[in-house]
Amino acid sequence: MPASAPPPVEPAAPPPAPPPTPTDMIQEAEAEGEVAAGSFSRNSAVGTVNWGTATLVGVFAGLLYGGSKEASASVSKDAEVMLKMGNTPDKREQYRLMRDAMEKRFIRVAKGSLVGGARLGMFTATFFGIQNLLIDTRGVHDVFNIAGAGSATAAAFGLILPGSMMWRARNVLVGSALGAGICFPLGWIQLKLAEKANLEIANSKPSSDLTEGKGNQSRVGAAIERLEGSLKK
Image (cartoon, rainbow, N blue to C red; front, side, top):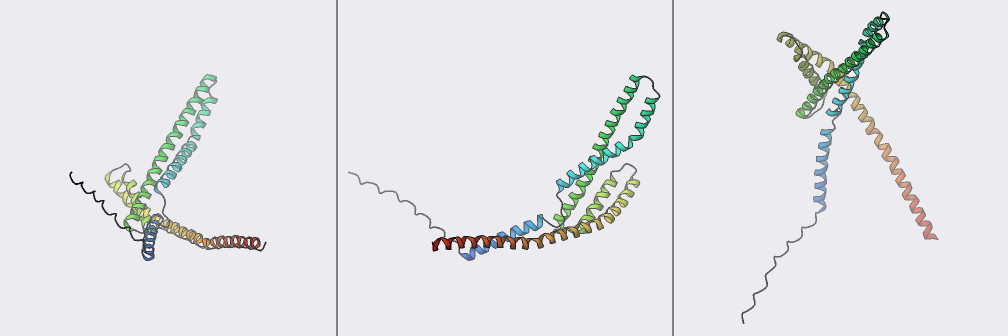
């Protein structure tokens, strides 16, 4: 009778990983805190503006400005139409003149709104796009980023204006100087206001934390008093 084969040897289970020591846990928490702090400071620099939000606001502002500009400019043309209607005795001709005037006015206002929204939206998107690019490249957000973005944006829009090459070169130089000269003080004011607002928020946090701590202590004290009263009974 043949001998039975020995049972297969099962592989030994790997030894369990040793529990992390308090030193390892502290080092891991410190590393995570440094990473989180670095990403937070990089993403929430003082005075930074979201590109998409700023572009959307610029588009809507351009729509309102362009539409209101065309609506105010069409007042004189409406006066001419009313004068023609007064000189026309036929009612049907008056209705036709009124309808044509309303259609032309609607078209002018709609066109002005679209053109204004596109122009101001492109300007806003270019400005804040260049500003965010400078922030990522330099690693710091200061007034020079705002001045550089304003200068580059004005120069770019001066370059695409119609005219000869000499005229465009002049527009680029003038736009670059004006953009930097206007955006430098405005950027300085913006950063100072943002720093002041952040400082006030930081100063208001300890008082709120202290009030919350007192509320927690009062609740704990009330719970202890109720427990003592139940034990005495």
